[in-house]
Amino acid sequence: MKATLLFALSAALMAQTAPKPVLTRTLAGHTRYVAGVTFSPDGKRLASGSWDGTIKLWDVATGEQLFSLDAHPLPVMTVAFSPDGHVVASGSNDHTIKLWDVAARRLARTLIGHNSYVLTIAFSPDGRWLASGSAHGAIRLWEVATGKQACIIEAHTLATHAVAFSPDGHILASGSREGTIKLWDPAGGTLLRTLTASATSKNSPRAIAFSPDGRRLACAPQSGHISMWDVVSGERQWTMSAGASQPYVYGVAYSPDGKWIASGGGPGVVKLWEAATGQLLSTLNERVPGGIESLAISRDGRWLAVGGDDYTAKLWRLRD
Image (spheres, one colour):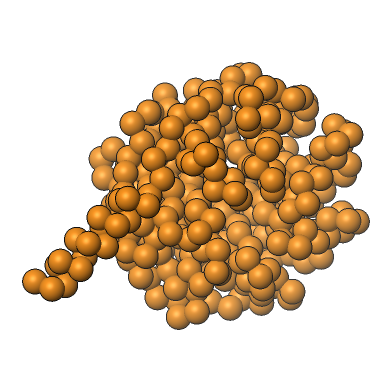
């Protein structure tokens, strides 16, 4: 009885402190799916990458499109802002990664080496390195300043859908269609631990996100089951089903305070979860027609963005 009461009180308190997102802006301009969204470190700009091959920069406060770049001849599958906000990186089905100078609005460097679609990229917290994963399964680590390839990690036998650095930069996590999450030492490409998410590619991790303290890793498999892993022990802490309203998940992001996570998928649904327990906090009322391809939360915790199959990016205000 006492445990039940404590759980109820905890749930009530969390419900009071959980954000109540308000759909504020729909950013229209792309002509195909928006496969990637990423906030600048100060949260003032949003970059979106699309299957139409373009990258667009938006003013978050006004929704104004600042500029558009004809980035790749084939779909842009992933985008990432550098930690200093000076560079936007894009990965494409043309097998390349491009680094864009935001201030000058021009191409700074092209990274060539992958022999398949580039599906995921992530900057290290210090901005020195860029990790990229491909449909071939390999992970490549690049030195941002020079564009030189530091190492190749033969990480997975099937497509690598997600990579993420821990907040201290000491661990690189990767999620693959083969149904595993692997933790690597980025300094030498040494495998630290394998987390078996699922034995089937249907439940493969499509998105992963470290907690702000780096101790836990949220995983969003295609099946719609959200999982939380202990990075040190390698144990799964909880798994919750998103249910029929979200049968697959393509994006997951941690709140800056580490208290909750957001998941986005199909058919166009965003859900908020308590990070400690996996309790569902809320399902956003507004749907994205078709489905959600990508999801991000600004570093200041004010905004949540999704990229959708309806060719738009949408912004929810989380707090003033």
